[in-house]
Amino acid sequence: MFARGIKHLRAAFFKIFVERGAIVAATSAIALLPSLIQSLAVIMASLAGVCAGFFAIHSAAVGLLNRRLTSSRGRANSLYVLCYYAGGAAGITAGGYAYGAYGWPGAVSVNGAILLLPAGIGLMEIVKARRQN
Image 1 (cartoon, rainbow, N blue to C red):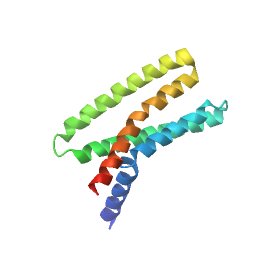
Image 2 (cartoon, rainbow, N blue to C red):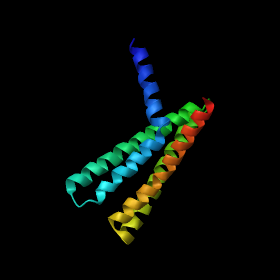
Image 3 (tube, rainbow, N blue to C red):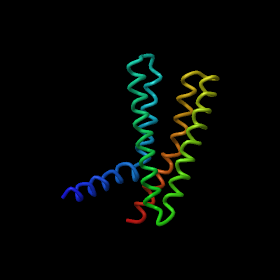
């Protein structure tokens, strides 16, 4: 019974995050906007929403990767983690330059633009899933 419940939760997780990765990315992008309001409480809530979104996107991407592979999962996961950290370093660098040049609105813009990548991948997954059904 417990195993069946775990299987159901896993399927629900997949449906919510992997097939709907675009929605998660869009929600994270929307969560960025309130951080432009000059209120510490609003900024903290906004950034908490963005962090939750990034963790959801990360778990969705790992789930999608493992679902697609039939072999060499360890290598693929290692490569994913490498790209994850390299992308994080690039995003932090781009955000820092944007902040230096345009202040907080520039950093928000760069992070919003970065979220277009998982949103696009999520949209492609939704289209692909609908074509298969």
